[in-house]
Image (tube, rainbow, N blue to C red; front, side, top):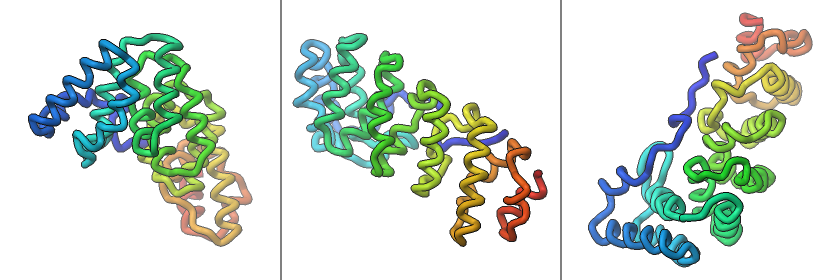
Length: 230
């Protein structure tokens, strides 16, 4: 099955790209701030919110904005490990605004957390902020979220009309059960006279046996394509 994502499965190291775009004042602030965090982790709580104002917030690459990348540099400077690191990351997420929360979620795969970052992903997926849901379903979730939760997260993206090329891991984590759930979703939408996102097609077609007779009987452009595969 060929399902592509918008960015590589592992996020790029943000520091080299930042060095190329930050002005000297911002570079100096970021380097000095990272050194302060490495020496005294608690200073991150003060410096983390300031990154957007000091470094900017434009698009850096397909994964990072400038402020997210700067905050990632600060987060990865933390000398903490294990639960202490997880607690500090959770604190920043809990007290952060949406931009700060996105930065935390996007930085998770760069931190040595194991499964300790999953509570932040799960909390985000219970909400309805689509930009945060997208950030949560990056490389960390693709690597750590259990199968049942990953499937439900993908279904939530379809329901909220989040393009699936923004979800990491579909090329390896799509299975027959997810395809069945998406086929059922398509059936319900067609019966209700509602649009069906076209980007579910590659996932459903990869498991043609999930395309049931009831779905095939419906008159809809989507079902015409599925019939060809099933």
